[in-house]
Each structure stands twice: as C-alpha cells, then as structure tokens.
Image (cartoon, rainbow, N blue to C red; front, side, top):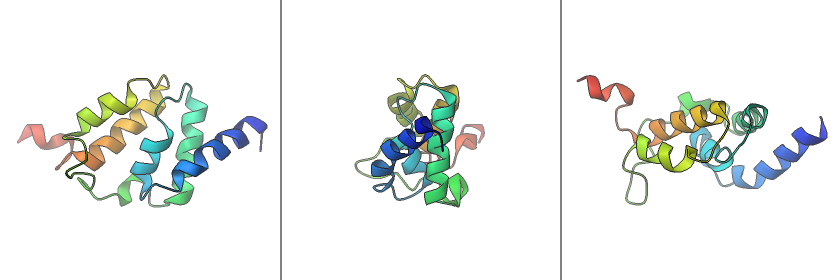
Length: 109
C-alpha cells in the first residue's frame, strides 16, 4: 500500500468506527475531500466495513428529531466544501438514502 493511501485509511478509521452503516460512514469520511482518489479510498474503507454498501441502507432511516429534513438539505451542508465530484456524488446519494422518505422519484407523483 502506498504511503498516501495508508494515511487516508488511518485518518478515516476513527470516524468509520462511529458509523452505523455505509451511508453514515460516507457522511463521516468524505466531506471536505479534495480529490477523486481520496474519495474512492473512503468508499473502499466504508465498503469494507459495511459490505452491503448503499443498497443495504434502509430508505429514510436517518430521519428523526436530530436529522436533516431532506436529502437536499443534508447534501447542501455536507458536500458544500467537497471539491471531489465523485465525493460530492457519494455524499448526495448517502444523504438522499438516509433523509428522503421515498427517494428522489417522489417529486413525480
């Protein structure tokens, strides 16, 4: 493993320990990531801890008294300072999975 990749893994491991699923892991490790290789490394770390990935996360499972009101609100807050386009897309997918009740298609009802 290259030193840069090892550093990324070591930096993200403490926050991964607090995550309860893949989406929460992404939201704890990816915000602020500046490049796509680092975002991909965070994805690999989260996927190794939560092998089911985003598909294993129950839709709307992050909703509650202390959560965000919507996936869009979460994305705005968490992805705003993330320069990596891949990282921002991972954040958006995780936010929408956790905080949108029925997913992004609910606007077409």
